[in-house]
Image 1 (cartoon, one colour):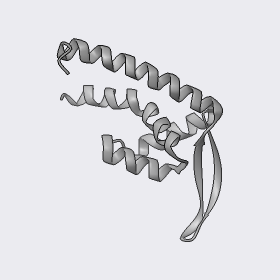
Image 2: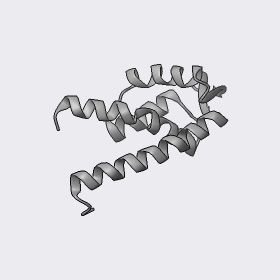
Image 3: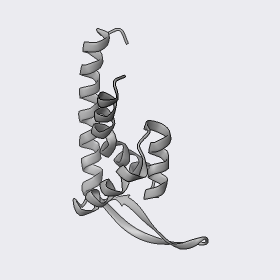
Length: 109
């Protein structure tokens, strides 16, 4: 896959992936970055600015948890607005990816 296309696909799905991970359980940014790095190759440098934006947009809330190995960790959880946004994005993704699959694979999925 040409690199430019792969990058754009990843960027387009990144917020949805973060919201999906947070819908499963609260998490801290490094854990989210590690999961996304392993799954789709997105690194920390992309995650931290996104987490700040999600917080400023009111989609996630934060709280601190004491860590036995250092300073407290900032955990993220979906706000009510974040839960609604996730559901909307998930529905949109399902519809969009289904339509793309229809076109690309001609319905033979």
